[in-house]
Length: 126
Length: 218
Image (cartoon, rainbow over all chains, first blue to last red):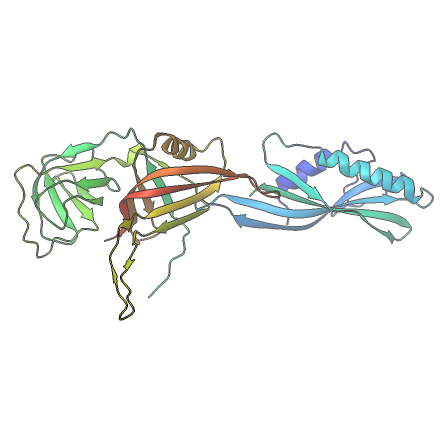
């Protein structure tokens, strides 16, 4: 499970995304826009780095972009890539979290929404 | 038999500019550990590393130990790792013990540590008739250390300084629980930075044991 610091930092960065960020974890959300992004916390583990009990949190989350029918995959993919690029450009000046890399997006349908989900790998101070 | 995890293990490097305290023993007990009597125990605390100069006890002479219990009333301190039981040693005319205060050491945060014992390179004397070998020149023990770069790590600063000045320093590992200590003198001879494609920026260092790293315990 991602730590509170990781969650709040990533959510803060996503608030400046090219499309609106909607937090959907344990919240009711009914976005009315054509495209929006949310985050799905998938995995996080803690590894011991040194004998001084320094730890690192290593994890992944999915950057999930939802698009209403009619947007078309060309624009959807373009916007999803822009969201990913904007997020990955962020640097935490405290070094508390580093976004290491991201995978290529997967696309699928969920209800009526066209969804593009991109896995992001991160390391954080544990 | 029991196995103890490395949780709680601390690694220390003494500073090259550490100011040792020289004390003159007035008596040394025949015990395990040996108890040293001095005129005053000022500046001596449990955990300090000591080097026993020529005191007249072959079990102690020119060896390093860790200070155990200090008695500020009776002016005595224990030498953890020593055993003078049954010794025929007699206190020499000018005995001295050099105490390296633990306040002159810095903690180094390691992700890995390998200590290799000294080895002897045997020289083969094989013939067609028989096999054999004689002892060759011994190779001093080595240490290999690794960790992660951290600009706020004062221990890492001391380690890089050790790499630059090439001066021998006491190296001390405080083992968890009641396992005791590993102590010896090392010269750091190589410091390198490792930059994995995906991961944390790390460092590695190697060193030579000027005084064999040994395990001492009560």
